[in-house]
Image (cartoon, rainbow, N blue to C red):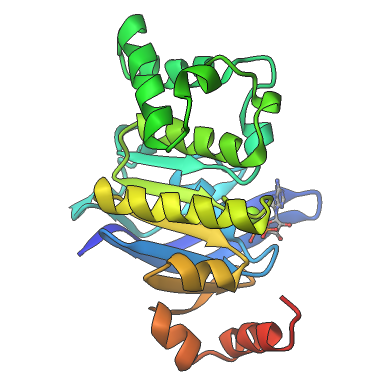
Length: 256
Ligand SMILES: Nc1ncnc2c1ncn2[C@@H]1O[C@H](COP(=O)(O)OP(=O)(O)OP(=O)(O)O)[C@@H](O)[C@H]1O
Ligand SMILES: [Mg+2]
């Protein structure tokens, strides 16, 4: 059973030299209830794939798909991500927060958009920070983004994503900017949240270590195409596509 399935996704971005194809007729199937990794080198189209799902492509982008279904329901032709329980954590947490707004105000705003009354929104915001295992949520609520460590900021981002009560959580390089210890803590948080909330998670990363530690299934992207999708064990033991083998060889040679 897939929670999200997209057939024949093509994305063209406008450039001064004409349209530039960043995703070329690709299909993505996200199995419900696990963690799917999307891995591939810089520029392969990983972020654009997620941004297409969230309806936030760059201005002038042309996005087409022949079919899209969420939780078994065909929503082609009436796709509106804001009506579906999908949240995303963006690649750079510092630029995703407004530096002039306290962490709490960001979260309250998300809850308020769902029609929640102000006092209840504050309670939900503090609860969400606690759910992201932030030790002193009331204190973090009152902080500005730059006053937090990278790890706490990423937890606050995840808390904000949880407020929308997603069933599908998209994470774009959530641990790339963090040191190894903090990275391991965030990965463990993601795993815990996935299990306790019955979430489906899609995580974009260029780090095969993250894939090995966290994912159930992996899609490998290269130059706007998904070249291979496999259960994580099989990807590491019996990679099929030459590009996947090349990625794995690069780790063995200490290049990644
Ligand atoms: N606003 C834009 N206009 C035109 N091309 C863009 C724009 N943003 C990204 N691109 C191009 O689209 C392609 C896919 O970019 P994307 O950001 O999805 O890559 P990525 O796999 O997420 O890379 P990274 O690992 O560096 O984040 C790249 O060739 C990139 O240069
Ligand atoms: Mg990216």
